[in-house]
Length: 294
Image (tube, rainbow, N blue to C red; front, top):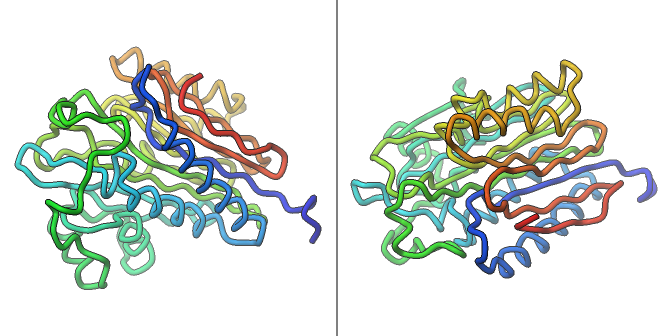
């Protein structure tokens, strides 16, 4: 197959919690390199599921985003992580919520999908599953976790601050997949779970579209989130209109959010109603684009 015939699409986000006026150059450089890597994987025939997992693992372990290593403790003083992954052709999905003590929750979410009959494991049960299956644990939390780029120490106790990472992809076989991961809102209560680990609100993939959401999770859940976009799109709305309908509802309810999506026809959308959203995208039809603000 010639390069020109290789059809694929990819987008990722580093969260819709970007603050106007702050410098996110290092994040944009990281997103640029990661998107190039994922484009190469897709061009070489890798599956959408493998690519979105690869992208999110890299963002989790980088410590640059509010996910994985860049997460802050809850009000009880320890880090709880959420993640989910979904494969469009089969609707298979896996997720973990309020997971303590592990480096890459997205890997464990995929493990839930492939190694259990369940979709979501939470808390101690998720940790037991991860430990039994040999996923990497955080040996020394005090040394491992770090402030993500653009976040101050004071903000880690402010429940209005938030961040998430996510990736969506279309591969050469026409399969779509989506993955999302977060450390949650800063200053969150112990056991708090937002939209990210919920299949439907935070992450969705089917035969037509793959979606990852970011923003204030409680408002995204109440607004219907990713699956409401998928239903509007399937019913005939344009991609942008479907997404903006959900974003408008989030705003009406008092929150802010961002969405990345790709369709089976290689259309890409990266839309948000917050100050900014760290994002990048590329397809066999579109050159690579990276941005944080408008």
